[in-house]
Length: 112
Image (cartoon, rainbow, N blue to C red):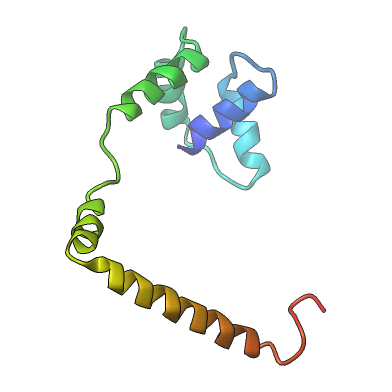
């Protein structure tokens, strides 16, 4: 991943086809020792490919991966089962907590 990050940094800097020595220089500038075998493998995989095109293809693949969700059903079920009264109690508790928190500052704020 660090080799790819260095490659992308060089690309953002205007070097459209970074060499192994360019990537090694970037890595060594932050104290990372480069592994020549991994670096050559990365450069072999990226040779002749447009990095922007690869990023857009990867983004399209990630868009099809399911993520999140699954937690919304329980909240809706609670509200449907008479959760309106519970919601009012929660609001009252929140107001009380906010009032208590404001008393804790003892007359001065964080940035005073």
